[in-house]
Length: 77
Image 1 (cartoon, rainbow, N blue to C red):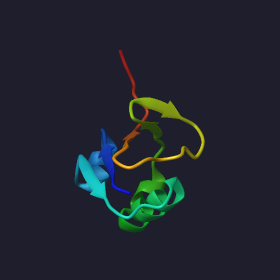
Image 2: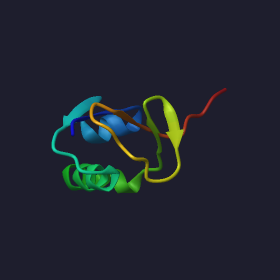
Image 3: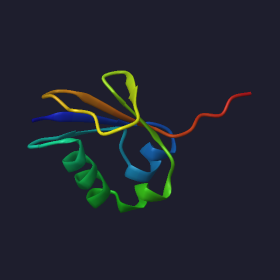
Image 4: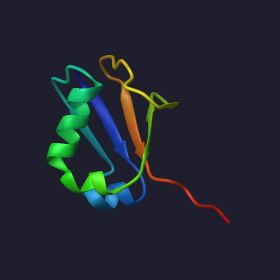
C-alpha cells in the first residue's frame, strides 16, 4: 500500500523534508521500520502520531493512501 507521511516542526528539520510517500508498506510496523532506517536520528525525539487527522497511541491498522503525521510536542505561550 502507499502511505503519505508528514513531518512537522523539528522532525521536518531532522528528516530534511515535510512530506514523503512510501510504497509497498505492509503494516504500521513496516512503515516505522522504514522511517527509522531512513532517518535513524528520529529516535532521539519525542513525537505523537496521527493517522488521517486522528491521534493514535498504539499500532493502527493502515489502509492504502492513509496519511500519517509525525508531530513533536508543542509549546504555547
